[in-house]
Length: 145
Image (cartoon, rainbow, N blue to C red; front, side, top):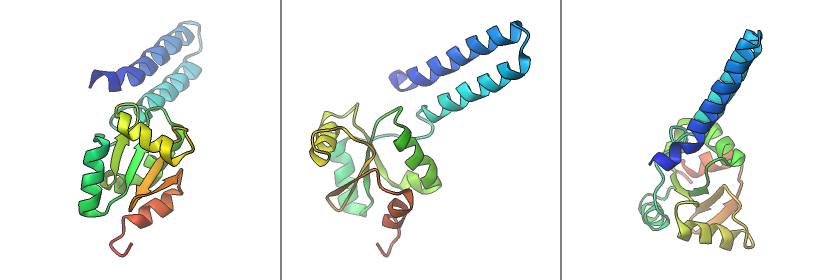
């Protein structure tokens, strides 16, 4: 669990150090702005923005039961963050699988993307879709889909 917080903690610490240096250098405005940027990046990279990931097998099992898509993602991926943020609250309904924590998920991402671990890869009914539009993913969650 602590490993998931490494990047956000480092971002917050680096931002704090840089903001402190700017502040004591006589630039309180830019220091505050820089600190806010680093704290926002830390928040976006934290486990708080993504639901708790499951393993690939568990996500596939759950998807077979409830029909919800499986999202293969990795921490720090800007496209994954874009998808998660644009999905809003409906993003919690998806089954998120971190490819850096699950070798089987990484293999599934490579199989769907010509050997590359391109994410986000959304698997709907066994078919993979690389970096799909968030509106399309939201449609897959509707009962009529």
